[in-house]
Length: 389
Image (cartoon, rainbow, N blue to C red):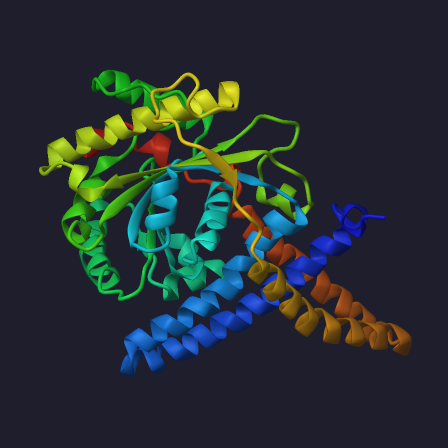
C-alpha cells in the first residue's frame, strides 16, 4: 500500500505540514533576526553565509512538498552547455512569466538543482515582507520590496541594488516584469494598452513594465554576466496549478524552458532596452503558446530547440523536512496524547483552539499565493502605464 496516496488530501496531513512549516519558519525567522542585528553588524559576509543555510532550510520545505509529496516532475529544456557551464555558477537576473500560482515554486526546483535556492532574491510588493516565514526570510535575505510609487521605488532600486551586487556569492535575482499575476481582466487591459501604443499584443502574458528593468540595468550590468529568460508552463488539466493542490498531493504537469542571454546582448540606452524587453516577451509568449498548444516549446515557435530532461529530486529537501518533522511533530504528538489522556476539558479545548489557529494562520499564508488575492495593479495602472514604455 502506498501510504502517501492514502494520506494525500487529508486534513490531518495538511495540518501536520502547517505545524512543521510554521514552527520551523518562525524559529528560523527568530534566528535570522538575532543574527541580522548582531553578526551582520560585525561581519556582513559571514552573516550572508549563515543566512543562506537558514533560508535553504525554510525554502526547501516547499520544494519537498512539490517533488516528494505531490510527486510533480519538472521537465527542463535548456542548452546542455549552458546548464553545465553556467547554471549555479554565476549571478544572474531572472525574467520569468507570472502566470500561475506556483510559477515561483516550479522555478525553485531549478534553483535547488543549481545550489542557489538559499540565495534567491526577488522584487516583490512591500506587503509581502511582513508575512511571517517566507516574507520575513526574503526581507532579511536581501530581496527588494517596492511600494509601486515610482518616486519612492527609484530610491529603493538604487540603494538595494548597490547592496545586493556587493554579494560575494552567487545569487539569482527574479524580476517579474509584468508587475502582477496574469488574470483575464488584466490581460484585456494589457492588450488594449499594447494596441494603443503600438506594442506586441501578447496571448499569455501581460505587457511588461519596462521602467524597473531599465532602471536596474546600470547597477547590475557590470556585476551580473547574464539574464536567464525563464518560461514556466503548466499543461491544462483538471487539477488547478495552485499551492493548495500541491499541499493536497495532487499531480501537475509542468515544464521549464530557460534561455541564457549574455548581458552584452542587451543594448545601451533606456529606449533601446525597453524595446528589447518587449521583443523578449514576444518570444516568450510564442514559446509558451507552443507549449500550451502542443506540449513542445519549439514546435510552433521560433525558439531555439534544445533537449529536455527531468530535474532530479535532490535528497536534501527530504532530509531537511524529515529533520524538522521529527523535531516538531514528535514532541507535539507526545504532548497531544498526554492532553487527551488527562481528560481535562480546559487543556483539550485550549489545544483544539491552538490547532484551529495554526490552520487558519497557514491558510492565510497559502492565500498569499492565490491569483484571486493578487493586486489590481495591472488594471488600475493601465491608464498610467505609458510612462513605463
